[in-house]
Length: 255
Image (cartoon, rainbow, N blue to C red; front, side, top):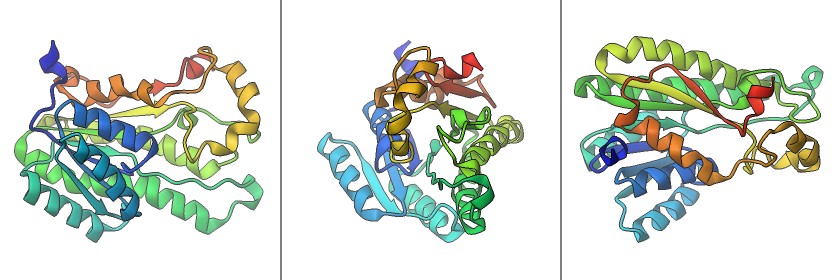
């Protein structure tokens, strides 16, 4: 059974992997034996996370990357292959948000959120899939959100571009899974509920009403992601494709 979750010798790229959910997922895959590549716009933070992983004896590469820029993506992929020889797992985790009432939502902020959250996932998957198709194997894990499953009351999260982008990721996951399935590449997504991250920090004043709607009666903990990431990254999920799995304490089951 352990072989289903064994990642020794595999190489994983985690965008936005320098902190929060991304760092947690990178650490989980590393502890399962994978080589880790973390990239985000802020190289300094990537280097800090790289140092933490290297202290555990994990082979790690940190690079700066704007996921909406094809040249940056190409540089990450080239360096990854040069260093580790393969790319087996991609987690499209880089994301951004902007909160504002719908009627006042700035056009440039809408475009920024879409560029990072949707275009970034498209460009990185497009580039990585070339190597995976050659290998006839690969795992792409997209990070959506429970807010992409339904509308969100503005008192909880007034960020229509973010919710829309995460809904787009769900359909992108389904369609890409169909396109890549003949090459033995599985594409799936997770939809985290409310976890303590930079994006959700504005929810603190609404914490008690929000908890009342979550059957588990708590926010997510970073370690709550460990099991699903290991499952989707390893051989245990070889016949799971195009799915979005909510990690939300039962919140989406109440809708």
